[in-house]
Length: 281
Image (cartoon, rainbow, N blue to C red; front, top):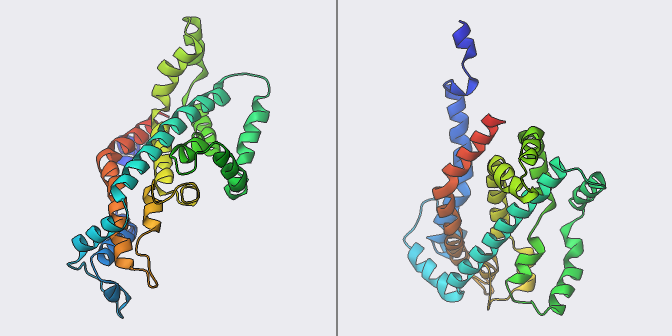
């Protein structure tokens, strides 16, 4: 009886209701992607029909070719990989560095600076669009990728997220022991902080990459169709008096495919790291 009570709850088998809920949630999560496939493989008339088509049609490859002819999707995907990758790497590094400083270092004005960082999360990003665009124009960066990358190299949410994680997961005794051994601040960060912060860094990197890849508002202001990201390219698809939704959906599939592939390959590693960090904490 005592052994049964000692078993962890995560080792128990789920009930039929649990599996039923998981199946329903999975279907609801995959439904938008399935509808994108259906719409991208049909004609515009079939999509607008009543009732609409519910099964994939034969026109997917043809619609994909039309979408690639209308916009330079290959260049858009490469640009999105560069932009999203650069933003993700920089955000994870800088936010982990700042989160460690706010969590475990003692310096004058720490609480005030942390309060200012958190306060910036309450300010709508749209308020900074006009001055930011004026700055980008003065630097002659319009229609260049650095105009999208540099304004988002660090995020207040990322700093706060890493700070909260490191307060719980990073014992102060480890830092004190490293200081007694003569380690420098950067050596402590590299050898002690980064291994402990890896699960949270994986989560932050995943969220940052998705946000950067799907970002539309700022890229569409500073980039043109000559040097687009995926979202800017999709904005130029299916133009006309009546937008061709089938071509738009086919292009959306092409733009979504790299993200799906990345998370199909790396999703297990990210989940394993998060679970390991949760058990360790």
